[in-house]
Amino acid sequence: MKKDYLAKIREGEELSLKDQTSLVFQLSIPAILANAASTIMGWIDSAMVGRLGSNEAASIAIVMSCMWLIHGVAVSAAAGFSVMVAQNIGAKREREARRILNQGYIISVGFGCLLAVIGCLVARQVPVWLKGDPSLVGDAGDYFFIACAALPVISIGAIAEGMLRSSGDMKTPSIIFSGMCILDMLFNYLLIFPDREVFGITIPGAGLGVKGAALGTLFAEIIAGFFFMYFLFIKSPMLHLRKGEKLVFEGDTIAKCLRISVPVAVQSCVMTGAQVMCTRFIAPLGATALAAHSFATTSEGICYMPGYGIQSAASTMIGQSVGAKRKDLAYKIGWVNIVLGSGIMTVMAIVGFTFAKPIMGVFTADPEVIALGAKVLRIEMLAEPLFGASIVCGGIFQGAGDATATTILNIASIWGIRVTLTAILAGRVGLAGVWIAMAVELSIRGIIFIIRMVSKRWLNKSQI
Image 1 (cartoon, helix red, strand yellow):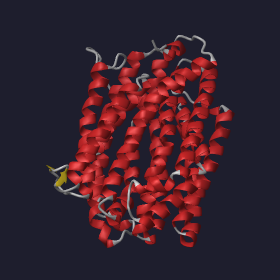
Image 2 (cartoon, rainbow, N blue to C red):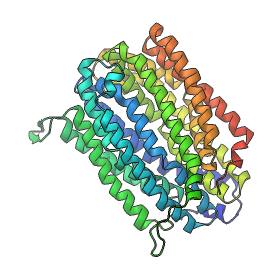
Image 3 (spheres, rainbow, N blue to C red):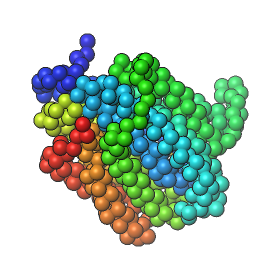
């Protein structure tokens, strides 16, 4: 039987280095698998659309950074509430954790609906603002419109996922995300392509192209959303709905959560805004560069996917440790997470560097796109070890409630270094210059975050 190491933290029991490592693996592996499923969904969309041609792939690439922007802002609304739930569970205040959950759920989903309306209103103009080629604007606008319409569903999944993980349940989100990945592949196949014959059997298809990719993901997310709500509100041992616990909006509680959520939202907005700015430098380079950039970005995701999985687990561990007033243990567990995250991402980087061309071949048969995509992917792989450190540190700091300082460091790094270097190098070196700027910035960001980790200042930011 698996030991409940989180319970040992809440009860004040000692954890050896072996126990800490076991805890990290116990929580990280399901989180990595869940993140892998999400990443694979991006691979599925890119690979299927890539088979339609470079223009179709480029039409998604032109709005991808804007999609990350609005989705990231929507998801960030849940961050503060999830951290507060983890810290209250660590302090053995489960009733208070449920009150925070109920308030956070309504606020997060309401915010997602508001963003959906705004996004849909401007969707058709976004590819024009990004200087996309006129031949790409129609498909790009349709894709972005459907992605924005999905924001309420994404908010439902994000808040439920965050709350389940805050309670220590990493397995359920992993299973749901895996199921969503399978559904996404099925829906995409049926919606993107027209009728096709496979082994003499006619497979029906809607032939919607780029729109089909967006709709397939939307339908998969809707089904996953229902499962997330079921397991959170009915099956969760700690957080399920109880009779007599009414929804009451508490100003002080909401203010504490917003001290984390607002910086995370600002960080997501400003950092993705920097990526949008970089896309404006890439767009004039042509459809080949846009397609190569999109496929390389998707491929990179499989390398940093373990880092973000460990980040989610680290946020839960640190949140409960800080809530239990065990700062020394939080610091030790934090380093175990960093070593694991950077180590795994280093191995993934070696694989990505070695097999860059075959990886690009998964998405397209265009030899120019494959060659350029492999070139820039190899540049990025050099930064993965330090990028891994910054990713995991972000989860550690967020779990402790140290969101503002993290936001400032991230914004200063991406705007001060990446955007500046991209502006200088894109016109001179082309797409490779954009990725050189990215690799330099991610490496420096990793060093900055390690310095913050060593300082221990983040340990004094608890919200309870």
